[in-house]
Image (cartoon, rainbow, N blue to C red; front, side):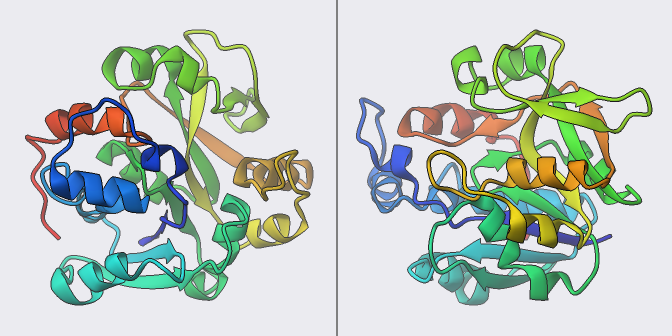
Length: 260
């Protein structure tokens, strides 16, 4: 499996919000536009994600973007065309949620398994590689204590991510919101899917905030008998949600070699 999808359609609402973080002019412009993947953290954040995917063995990448995201298209289709992977684009017309964003790549997937990841998270290459080797659906579960200790995700922010409850056979038993323990495995929205996920994404009900959420589509797929292998990791995931994250992420990525 060598196909990956990066969900880059988000509105970047929290990134647009001004705070006391000291940014340069290029970072400020990208933050004000809400295009988190294009924020310079040494170079555009998406460069690091695409390079990590290539390092992990992926060679076909689809960026889910909005109709207004010409800057992302211009970079990877013209200004900085990657040589190690092929980059294509899928358009999510309206920001209706992450499950709807996954539906936008149905034609791209072509009936084959595919990885899904956020555009505002930098994941360990070993997690990307391990998911690629799965035979069937799966997710990366990150130890909560490691996320807090080694990354920039505090306990308060992790509360918004579901914990993965693991069955005796290593499969996903449930995604649980709420109380967190240090040994919880947190789902950071890093998935391996088969085409079976598309039916769940079409059928999932809107959440209370009106969005079609991917975690809820996974819950629906599990209730219908789809098995997801949970791969545990003790590692940090870098999160680029707000302007306050930019300096930390820039420093952590300083030594990372990027090759598109």
